[in-house]
Image 1 (cartoon, one colour):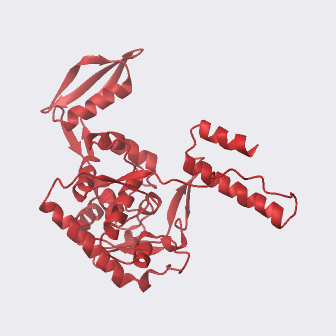
Image 2 (cartoon, one colour):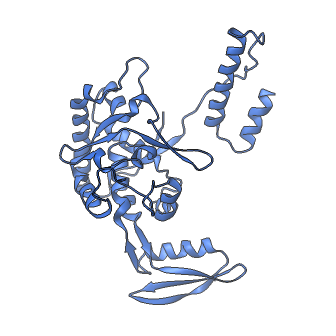
Length: 326
């Protein structure tokens, strides 16, 4: 039954990583049934390697590549898509302030919307630029924040004078769509991370322009002022199209944090200091309190700052590389 259940999971598109987590949980439950409750004589979870996860290689962006999506996510071509009849859509777009009709009739709305996006990116259609997501991309990357952490930040959590961001809580989205506010992913997730000085001006502009003055105001709110959902962010920024425009189809938002962690690792800081900045638990030592490594975190932050500064010398930089995610 266990072998069949695992095969069904994998056959239905569940990733090897998720299937391995489910297998390990079941194995632990049944081990309790064997050793403590003596309900069964032997643990039936005996599939060799079923609990092993093989880390997928994820892209690590160059500093220049981080600024590229930060600048692209707010660009929106001016136009609209109208349905003419079944499987027929007409595209209208603005060019030099004048509305025009695209000569092609599209068979799907998605095709028409992608065409409009491409026209905006290559200058064939006028664009407007909403910069409210620029600071989100930069902060998530260079401070190494998870989506659930950056989306819960309040004005009081960011101190631009000291160049720090405090992570006290995080959002978790359940399968039902409900957002639950609770502690970060790990105990070490409650932390204070340094903000590179090169992005402080972007954060200051964002706070002055898009965030209410109340200390408890969300730094990155949704359209109606509530928490920003990942799905809403992807839709409003056309994240999939942005990644494709960069030549990195399949780029995930979490890859920004992965990139920031790699930049931090390149600072030469020790493992414990890196674990504290990234919000990872260290089973050998309780690296929970940020004050114990704040000086080291400043060294890490300054090293990231220098890498951002180096962007001015080499705008393109080397191509992004794939690094396994642990």
